[in-house]
Structure formats: C-alpha cells, structure tokens
Length: 118
Image 1 (cartoon, rainbow, N blue to C red):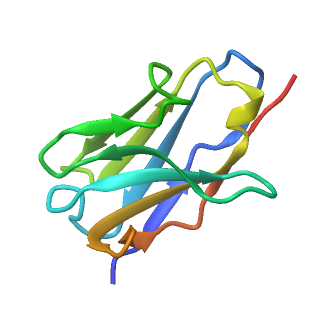
Image 2 (image 1 turned 90 degrees about the vertical axis):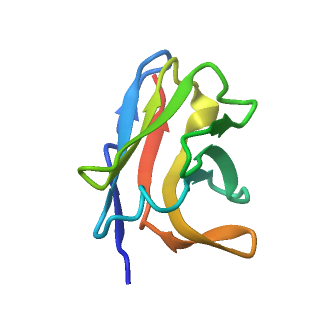
Image 3 (image 1 turned 120 degrees about the vertical axis):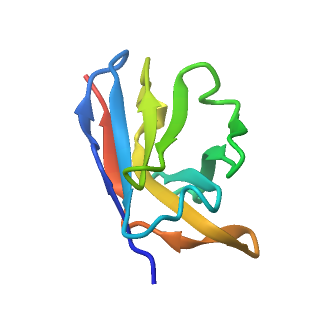
C-alpha cells in the first residue's frame, strides 16, 4: 500500500505563490503517472494538472501558464508550483498517483488547504 502525503498549503495573498509537495512512501512516480486535483467548498473535485510516467504534462485551462507540475523520482516526491494565485484557486489540493483505476489513479493523499485571500 502506497501512502501519499501533501504539504505546503497555506494562506497567501492574491498574486502570490506556493509550492505544494506530495511525498510517496514508495517509488511510484517513476513507474506511474500522477495528477493534482482540487476541491473548493460546495464544488466537485476538479482536475488541475497531470504528469505522465513518460514526462508529458497537461494543465487545466484555469491554471495553464500559472501552475507547473514536476517530480523528483529519486526522492519519491511530486510538486505543484503555483504562481499568480487567485481567490478562485482556494481549495483543498490532492495528490493522486499510481495505476489508473476508473476515472482516477489508485492512491490519494489527505489533501492540503490553499487559501488565497487578502
């Protein structure tokens, strides 16, 4: 069983930056792709960004050009660099990795809160 633990969330002003981290208990990021999702209060969970095992990445339109996903397979870590944050980016952010099972991948982290507010 792989465990994923997100960190790096917090309160930031509009226009600010944060880097989220996702630590895996096993060597999962070199074997499988991963994705970041977020869920705001009263809204459904939405996809933010993906990083395939081969290195290809994709971003949701709302974050394109502002967010960047990366990984360090030697450290079993994945990251989401978030720049020019907006109030609409406020949400709990989740790391999702492993084999594809249905719509998502197998393993989820517990989430980390990001709040963008002045």
